[in-house]
Image 1: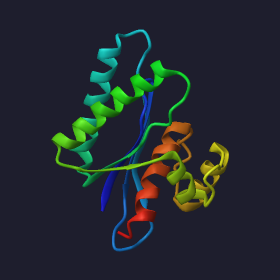
Image 2: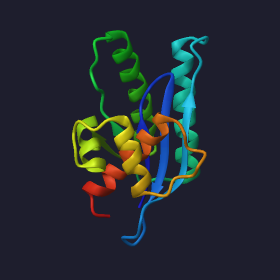
Image 3: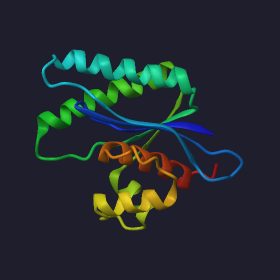
Image 4: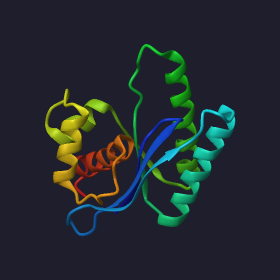
Length: 158
């Protein structure tokens, strides 16, 4: 099974395409931290995010979109902007006919580390042990997207 997994944002979007075949180990087919500039209008940033997701879906043809739910912080503007970016991403996946699965940050931390209050460093460390990661992967958002995908495979014996 091939999936696209997302750590949503509007400045930085973590994106990974993972595949698991015949109950073997998961493989990263693609990962990136897609960035938009604060210098362009927010509506254009949303358009660029949607265009990038659409391009990746067309290229890799995943069966499902796995996306992290929002973690509510005290900054309501950030939450609103991220929720709009999530909407664009989910829309693109829906148009492509993908199954959509969401996981909370707590579920992702538990699936990857066994501990719901794990730090970013602990998640990063475990993700590197769970799947072979290219040395070029350095962004937290990229690692988080990979962790989202691994959560799906851990929760769904594919």
